Image (cartoon, rainbow, N blue to C red; front, side, top):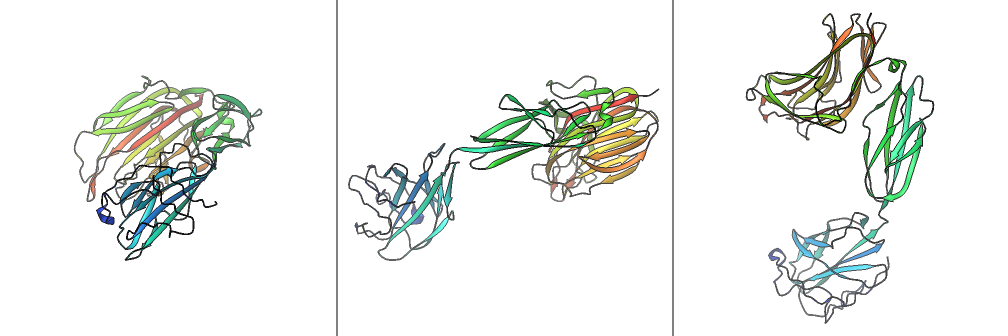
Length: 441
């Protein structure tokens, strides 16, 4: 960027108190004024006023127009100063200010107010050495701004058997577009901001792993990618037993609610998620960590072969003291149980994924997960063989022959008093519980 002399186009004096810098209320002024002090790019000798230890802070802004720009602030050793603006050329904005009687030594200067579509060349903050005695110093910042736009890439992956023969529909910005089962669409140079992307027209024997719709944040001069993973299998052709999308802002009364060591719960049903933010324990936390639980139970006509699918998420608010669990139980008419879900019962680490088939347990291990995250889960049975999976990773198989007839969603708050503090419940959520099954004879 070419340097330009700074003409005097701005008149008012800038007043600022800065005891740390040794600046008096009357001695701090901008480099622009009715009687201007022009500062060239390579020479500070034109600062002719005989004042000790002057520091000129100058910002050059080049390129596209900054968006949502409110001006620059220089923070010198923790003290903030607003920089005044002049426009010396068609494409280059210049902001600046002269600080007088700055204490000698190394000073840290940070530039604030850089627009979202702009980048600063070099370190921020940066150091400037103020010599003792009569001295004139200058610190320049160069900012380059780009078009306020980015790219959004949508990628589909499909695996399994009996794949969708005609592809999917992608809804972006309110418009449906066709996209293949293994495809990539790019929306280039779209304005920055948040967009909702939804995949639909998925075949009955296929289902999505992960969120749908997805909120995508497009940022300046970057490509944001949204991936849709689809799995297809022959079990998905089984008759629908029930599907709860949690999308009507009220819990379906078919779910029977009960409690264990809890007096109430706090939840919200919105979008396609049932989100639980608290299970209120009957007693205060104690070292035995007795769990307070809420149970949502629903019965259904007994089925043999089946496919159960759902998504779960958790948010421990970046705190290991947020201790909660969420899992689904499937019961047979003989009382055998399959469960699969998320468990965090530890005050010193994050949680685990856990699955169990009538007492045979598989787990990722405590601490294996991020404090916040999500996963898709499935339970299938074909000819008596039960398999539990997270995403496309199997967590075990086993044989159960009795028909399944009951499903239970369980959320727990592990009510612990620990050496580092009392535990509490973060957030757990379940999205779209779908059960398909062949009626038992």
